[in-house]
Image 1 (cartoon, rainbow, N blue to C red):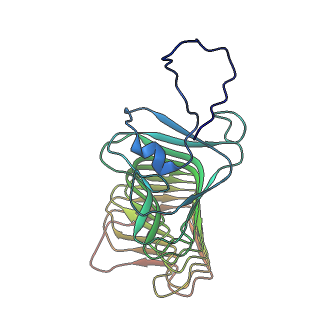
Image 2 (image 1 turned 180 degrees about the vertical axis):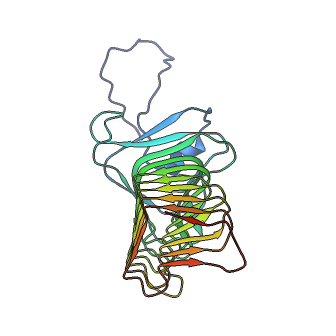
Length: 262
C-alpha cells in the first residue's frame, strides 16, 4: 500500500502519472472490467478458487454478453500447456463461465471442478468448448446453446455431463450419476464415448428432444440405463456400439419413425 517498485527510470517532478498493474488474480476480476468482443483471457496453469456465485466480481464467476475467448496456457500464451484449474469453494447455484448471448465464445484448455456444491455448473456458452474437463458438478456440467464441443471429458458429476444442440467430437462422459450426453435437434455426435454412468438417469446417449441427430463411431458401455435412447424422429446411427449396458442397447420409441441404423 505504501511502496511501488519499478523496473525502469521514471520522470521526476511533483506530479507523476504511471500505470501500475499486471495480470489479474481471478476470473471474476477480468469479468469486472470492460471487454470488447474478440478479447482473449489467457489463464496460466495453476489452481484458481471461485468463492462467489456472483459474476464479474473479484473471486467470482464470469459472465459476458459478448464473445470472449478464455484459454489456458503453460509457459507462453497459446502453448496449450498444462491447463489451469478453476475450482469452486463454499458457494451454490452458479455457472463458472456463462456466455450465451452471441455466438463465437470460446473456452479452451481449462479444467473445472464444481466441488460437488449445490447446482454447480462449469460452462454454458454459445460457441466452442475445446479440450475442457469438468468434474464434481451437480448441474449439467457442459452446455452449448449452439456450437461445438471437442476433446472434452466430464466425470464424477451428479447431473447430465453434456447438453445442447451442436456438434460433439471426441468427447468422453464417464462415471457420472446421470446422463452422459443429452443431445439437441440437428446435432452431430462423432467418436464420443459414454461409459459407467450410473443411477436412474444413467443413459449413455439420450436423444430426448432432438430431430435429425447423427451419431457416428460412438460407444455406450456399461451404463446403468440405455446405451442409446432415442425419443425423436429422423435420427441416424452409423458404426456405433452399445455393450454391457443394464438397459436396452438401442431404444427407439414406437411413436417416432425414420430411424437409420448402419
